[in-house]
Image (cartoon, rainbow, N blue to C red; front, side, top):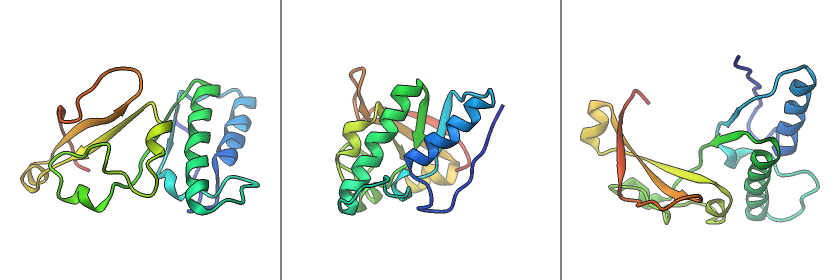
Length: 147
């Protein structure tokens, strides 16, 4: 079963997501996967008075905590830096805002495509961070899709 909870930009934080999951769980439904469409625009954590950069780091830490305490897969997206537009393959240095995002994830993937690959609908996925095992940033898996 798929459940969807829709919220405007910056109107819910990780604590709010956790509250939604609590309500669903009391109703008998426990998710295996939570997808957050672009975590960088979540609302600041409750009672957090630090600047935006520290709030962003706290949100990423809380998403990892959500994954750990609920034993679920949390999937989200983030922006890469301006250099990623010209990079053939995105690497761990292509982060935007705060590199500490990389510290909190179990794995992070890059989505790569040359203009020719985009024209064919072919994309290359690579690990830019992988906590549990060795990886090589330059190794990619090719996928066909319509992003």
